[in-house]
Length: 552
Image (cartoon, rainbow, N blue to C red; front, side, top):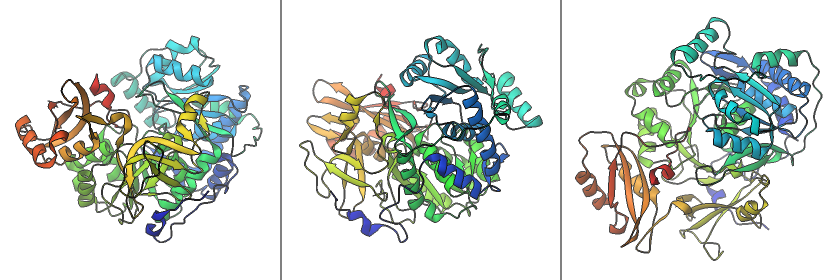
């Protein structure tokens, strides 16, 4: 059944209505073609050390051969647990070539969280940065892990630089807690051993799972989205159509502050950038804003991906305003709502539009994107990417008309196969082929979509629906506010009451001043009843504010 796509009339020139999801048979075929096509170009750079596509191709082969040498078989799961290092793309492509399923793992997991993921996915191999090895040591006896490859921040930086970086990390910053993993093999040793082995080619199909990407950990028991080779290949083609159209093959230098274990960075900063032969500059610690600014200063950055909090932090760093941005073509925000005040300031400072996108882990992840050429709508998450149907449905299942609010649902080749070993949750999430996002929003007459809020974050005040994003958007516009997060609290009189957590930009900001400002800009039932000033707000490792922790 075909659905009307009113957004197509607003596609920028050159953007196709559909993509061919069968351009490649697998991610391996995709990587093989592009690594050879751009062999002489720089692929990834960290701390001034670059790796070409030819080198990436060779090292991925060595790593794949090592995994096979260690008797890992097609379909076995391998967890990758490290920050943005040169080792990451090597491990990704090597694992895929060996026919393994990748389990991207947050290196900041607690022992309890790590144990759950390793046992739930049945992980047999782990590649882990030594900074987090003590966590693995605590849970290893309870898992089925047989192969451990450990690495360090400086291991592939080479020579004096690598030794110096490791010395600083281990002994000056003391970022490596003591651990014992006697059977762990250093990453370079694994590569050397793999170089002496023959790689047995693995034939993979689009229907086979490539990633187990865990999601939902902030709201309940994590679930692993099964993202197939076909899902990810489709999303790569969709990203190429709407983003890479504005970039030049083999000539771009892009910045990746988001960690590669996050699905947005995995799809955009690794896979899509490989498809155009870009040099991706990796950011080890995106919270070190001055370091991010330094990367802008030293590299001709043309594309950046990030979250609202990162862009806001850069805009509040005085040295950022002194940079030149003549090479900057594309900046994309995802992962959380982009505040229009941040988007407007970003355009004023850099001259480049900050484009909001929307996606979910379960959709590989990109679903919609505001046009890169600046013809988007402020506050909108944009238009569905090619070959994607999006609709809004009310509680009765009726498809809503323009302007009517309901749950956003998605159908397209990038939608996951389901949750690993959770048919019950899959049945709730995918109904008649539609991915039920849990996000509340609406479509306007031009086919632009707008997110109002998450179902679970909605606050009901005296029977009225209040959406935290709207209140956060208003409060963030106050010139003395740096960051804000809004939650609902139980209230005997109103059912729920609104509470705002605020980080001041200007110390002179008072509660009375903020209350008066909100009264001028919000209707009475949306007004926060409580205000709390904080020095900082709890965030995930990618900078997404954790409302759950604020609720206590």
